[in-house]
Length: 180
Image (cartoon, rainbow, N blue to C red):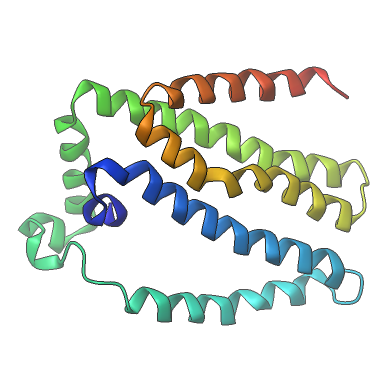
């Protein structure tokens, strides 16, 4: 919502792509550092790195200009969790048909991403693969997201590209089910 609010209408996909590419670049840096460090440091200690990186993220977020403030929310959304969910669902109901279709598409794209980035590495680990190979697998699954910025530029320029790219990606990922 923050990016959508502050991006130019003609550059929305580019803006999302840039943020996705940047975030996943640093995620891959962490993944490849983990491949090296996991040989010398137990995994549970590596998770402690979340603390300083979260603090750095907080510093960056604090420098962003304000987005939607509490004063702009309805009274019910400010007062309770139920009110927040109520406001959320009212917003979804108010969306146009095309926006709802996009939300469904994003949901299924998210499911595919979770399978590739979460469940496949867990499955590999349960098949007695070494931890560094599982980490490497996560890196390979995340690598295509480095091109999100470029794909965002293409999506802003050619509107139907998103549909075909998601469809082709889904077919390719579906074929993984038949490969040992």
